[in-house]
Amino acid sequence: MKLNCWEFKKCGREPGGINAVEQGICPASTLTEFDCVNNGKNAGRICWMASGTLCSGITVGTFARNADSCMNCDFFARVSEEEGFDRSNSEIPKL
Image (tube, rainbow, N blue to C red):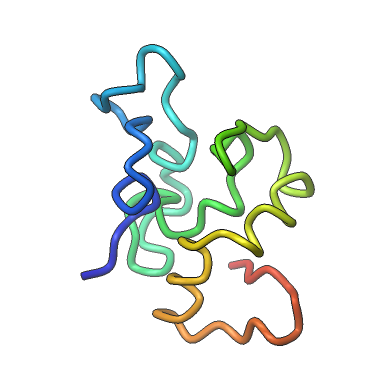
């Protein structure tokens, strides 16, 4: 089953999640313009394109700052494998 990032990471920052009030709702769970990309809900399977996502326990502000964290993220690796991204060129897949 293909999971969204908040399901895989269990961060609890999705609407109604256990950490949503304290840490805020993650933009990946609400960005509707990315809905269905990589078969995910909102930006749930393309979170590396969303500013303000939680990377390695730190909320980052811009895509450029996400890049290094995302390339080493276990969820990014999983989506890359499931969607057939070529990660050998070290580029982050975009839309």
